[in-house]
Amino acid sequence: MTETRIHEILKEFGGKRILVLGDLMLDHYFWGRANRISPEAPVPVVAVESETFLPGGGANVIHNLHVLGVDVAVIGVIGTDTNGEKLKTLLTADGVDLTGLIADSERPTTTKIRIMARTQQHQNQQIVRVDQEMSDPIRGSLCGKLQEAIHSASHFDAIYVSDYAKGAVTQETMDSIRKTKQRANRPVIVDPKGRDFAKYHGVTAISPNQSEALGAFNLDEGDESTIRDVGHRLVKQFEIPQVFMTRGDKGVALFESDGNLTQISASSQEVFDVSGAGDTTAAVYMLALIAGASPKEAAELGNLAGGISVGKVGVATVTKDELLNEAESSGQ
Image (cartoon, rainbow, N blue to C red):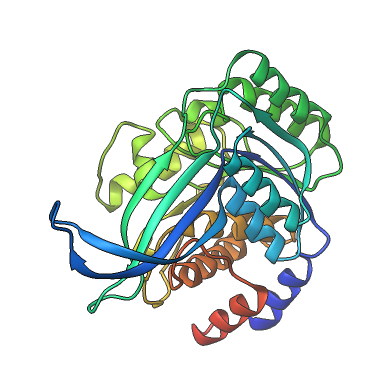
């Protein structure tokens, strides 16, 4: 893909409106120094110097889209707690339409706490992660509120579903999304989780990583032949026109309904942190599709975005300029 073509696609990012539905999270980072081992247990003692709060999970997708100039509306659930208010503040700062944001007193806001420490050997190494969450599927009246928000959504160019298996993306939720897809005639892109891929039946595209794709057929590992078979089987069995599979240091693979398979090698970017890289990769892939890119072009841009993301510490975003610079340096 030429630099001119990338410019053309990126230019179309602005003004798009995306409806993001799924599991919203708050990423809470503690940053400090680790110069000694605790006398209580063989673990490092981190002297905290600062802390930061960032949008995570589906909220990280939203933040990525915002940075790329996209207008975003959200549908999801947060708790009526301090972390929920912090996440709401972050989304508000990004100009997100919060009409579909539901606060529920029975569920805590999903929060990932990461302790990051500098040592003599490493800069900003993750020492431990602590999760605060409730992952039971959303049912009853709360599910009804989500379905009503989906039904009421309007004026969007695509729906992005961020499934982190924290309860928001159920069969009932996906049924409502499929009805909205049919009514509005807009693409639906899903970042899947778990082994029940049947609930994604009939969407426009899914973006599993290799492990998730294998898990859809109860496989824990597979050779290249098996991975190819799995990709094509996902397309056929679940009637999904595009399967955009991320493969870590092997890049990405795009499987299409016409039987085409496009494999794109990973960039040579040094890996510092994979946190949120899948969100970034899938978000850029989806945005490129609705900006007029071909599936192959969208896969190439998504791959570039993922390569940039893993070169940063913490859950990170990418910019249009970074995509252009990465494309130039990689010879695209």
